[in-house]
Image (cartoon, rainbow over all chains, first blue to last red; front, side, top):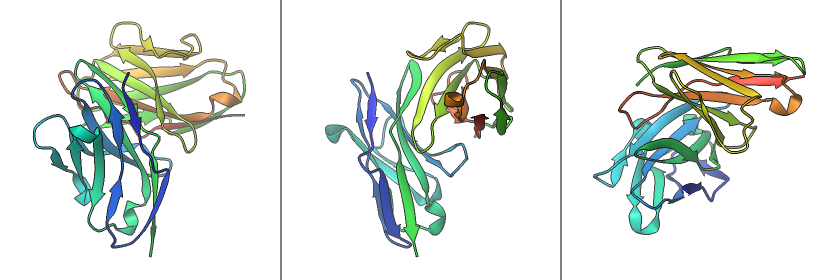
Length: 113
Length: 115
């Protein structure tokens, strides 16, 4: 069975600082990997996705993520955060032929001035 | 990206009543839709997979007689919470999967409060 671990429940960073959110997955084959962002009371917005190919993927809002098969990781990064980035971030894993998504428990990001 | 709507965005109902939540795919046909629930400060848990014209597939532990799913058209799936109880209070989110696609598109969610 596939699973996703987001080790950090809550992260606080200063505005303008860099950010890295961790995601580790467990899946037997090559997974599909996603990062979503959710503002309070809102649905999910896709930040970026990895299906195959280049392991460094670029997303919206200046986010990027790197797929590292050897570490079973798909960490999300941003070089300089903005106050508007404060939200809940979810990593998810899926697979071809069974498009069910398994979500991590989420990381809440707080931005301080 | 694809546009998915949910109605209502929030609903309050009394214990014992039933509530219907709609999920619409506005700009493409979706043979497959998914229903998730999210408790406060928790992650999304898949409840069921809804396929147009066939019975929904429920995840383990989800009561199919309590959470009725109907996917009668290629653009509409409904989730009915029957005989709702306070423990059913949650945020319900649907998503759609266009045919041949690998990416789900999520609706804005419906906040259900059962009093």
